[in-house]
Length: 122
Image 1 (tube, helix red, strand yellow):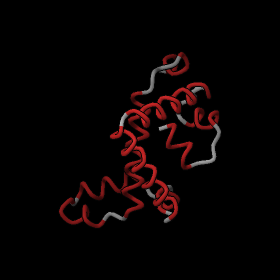
Image 2 (tube, rainbow, N blue to C red):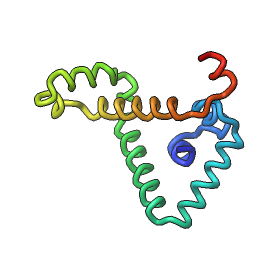
Image 3 (cartoon, rainbow, N blue to C red):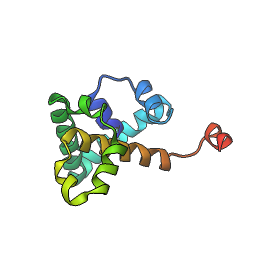
Image 4 (cartoon, helix red, strand yellow):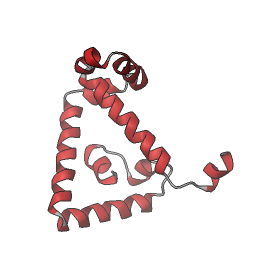
């Protein structure tokens, strides 16, 4: 994830760390080194990472990432679930990207290690 963020944005390691659950920049740098090690030693990982990067770049160039920010992923999910036989084939790409981003962010939040701040708030 850090590697992709560096590849498709101009954010610093500190900015990326803050956006991904207030991680320290050294955590981001460690993740970057680990991704590069895996890319060098595991052809499957390299292929998957390169494919994800190419997909994100293409979506970004097409303006879909910008459009997905204005989509309401929960409204899309409700609409599709209410009439899956009709609505599932009518979901625009921007809404699909918004749904994917929502699921990814929810997963990240659910699996992030609890910090003292997070555990005190619970």
